[in-house]
Length: 444
Image 1 (cartoon, rainbow, N blue to C red):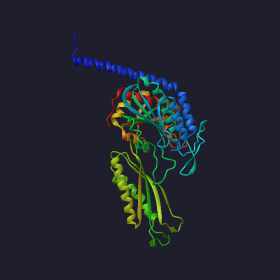
Image 2 (image 1 turned 180 degrees about the horizontal axis):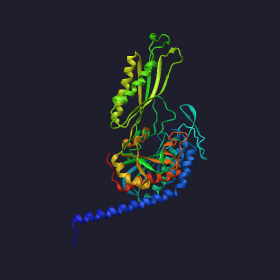
Image 3 (image 1 turned 45 degrees about the vertical axis):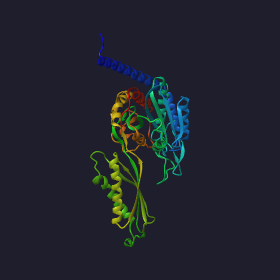
Image 4 (image 1 turned 180 degrees about the vertical axis):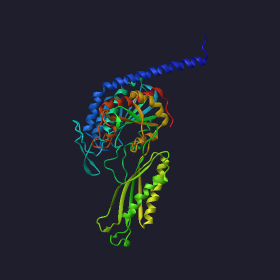
């Protein structure tokens, strides 16, 4: 009996589907076993990195350690990317798409308070000052997780359909030698500008961030806008110096500055459509004056502008600038306004997020939750702006603690429950393999 072409096609499709499922199951079993086997090495690497943190664009020891381990795996390795970054390429034996995995490597100018045998005693130079240095945001965990992921995926090279690119990125927190209003080397942005996403160009990019206040091993994700954009706001109010007992002889920039702060609160509350996404305009510093009875010549202020949408972001900039300048003008003063765009909003590609949700559930053993909008910013956004991206959060707070009282990221008491790190390895490795085995790409 002859089969019709339609029946043959259906049978072939069914066989292919079973084969793909078998391949997926096999790869996941391999990843789970290898992640567990590599856990002692994973923790050793993380603790070594934690004890030797380095600030943005100063990650020399870290990048040397990363490059050495990647070269030992036989990968194509490029160093000195965006100053201190490392990029490695793993080419699978079979044809297929390309996926990129990213980890950041830099630490923060924070003094560690935790009583750990591998607590940081490191010092560094930040803005020309000697400071204590700590991995207070968990980038040591990110680096260690991606190194273990590279080891696992390299061991699967003979059955891997496609290419995996590993981005070990510097200066996610910004450069330690930041130049106000000057040309600065922000990690991800500079890597993109140097062409790391052109050759080879990934079809998708994945990133992970350890997060305090989320139970250890739990994964939180969000489709669409996830983290805010971050823009620096610099304001100089120019008045006219005079005796404080004769204010009418001058122009008081302090009074104008106070009115400016109040006026800026109306930019969000009265001029911005927050029905879809919230926005924030905050002033963080005010500096002006030398003596109690002198009205100064000028006042300097700085702050931040946060949003989750490109259109809202640009309108905020225009409204902030107009508000400041007009308030200054109404007081007879002049305002110089500078807005420095730093980080774009991090936006998870909705189709990619939906596609990879089963992967996240497998990696975290179904302990997956929806994440709220995060007011912080991430320069993973520059990678996700080039190709479809997915950025998820890995909980690292011990489950027997009150999540609401956990020391947050960037705090001296920030703590990583290391039992969560193996979940991070399963997550990054399976995101890569599941995408490669089961994907022809997701359009942006």
